[in-house]
Figure 1 (tube, rainbow, N blue to C red):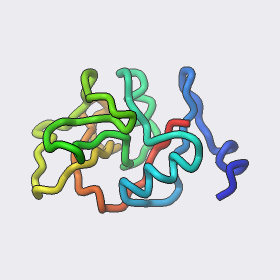
Figure 2: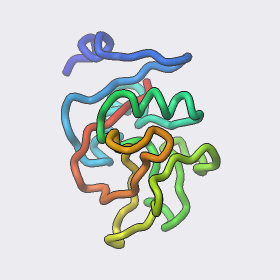
Figure 3: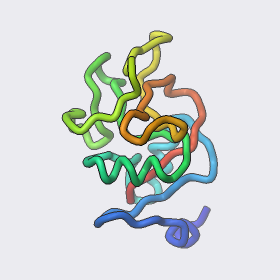
Figure 4: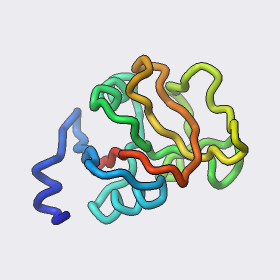
Length: 129
């Protein structure tokens, strides 16, 4: 995909622009594609941004993981999770012992839709450019 094509597909919210993928990739490949486009997997800073991202209707990777240290959730910019947090009930649970990346699930309620999952699974993804 050419960058000019991507610019036509960007959605705006607040002062940020977002690329909503039309292909599925694992978490690392999703993050790399976002970097190639000049951004990163989305970092959700507010309830309003969470609601906007959820409204895109995708089960998609976001820029949150505990890849460095189990249970220490960090955004792709290196900042700790902090608040706000929008986990589904019972999450994060590292159910399979390898759930280190976070997806947003559109079939859940907007404010309780984050799930930790296996980073190697393929999902849609949302870049913040």
